[in-house]
Image (cartoon, rainbow, N blue to C red):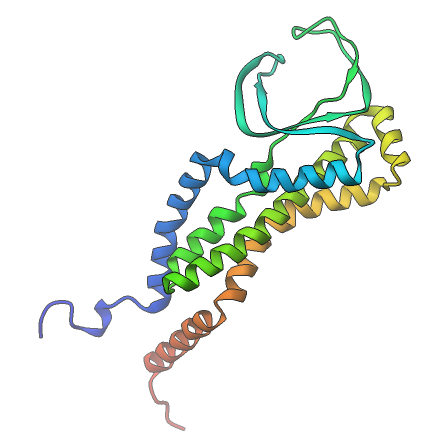
Length: 233
């Protein structure tokens, strides 16, 4: 027999998929981070519409891009993937290296990338799955629409959380006037930060590729049965 023709030399479908996923996932994360301003744009636009339409008395502007600050408050750069919020909440600004202090309008910055790693995670799994080009494009279209919606949810929830818990009494009072319960805001933030980014891509991949996953499980069971062999009574 020729070299490599033995049954032990071939990768099982499960191992083949795992190897492809290990190769695709790092590449997906590199592309995701390199094009971060592009990937966050749909979610930012959706979050902007929700914040200004539902809580226009709290938020007056939502723009993409924000300054990066060091520990002393000095600007060290500008990141196009950040989200800058302008609110109607006034806060007391302490004096420091960045300025003399005083009363000012709260203008926090949100990092939407913490809600966006679902994209490369799903991308790596989808690229490792054997699909036709048409099915792959359809799956990416479905996944991107849902993941961007979940990312927008995280941006909205964090924006409200900043007012409710990070802007002192004036922020908490403004949130209360808007009819929002602090516990509900905290729960929404935790759900959008801890649950949605991790669960959404995996649940999507499983739901869109059930036949492939069932084939992997079935093949793995058959290989296990062959290794065990027939047993006597």
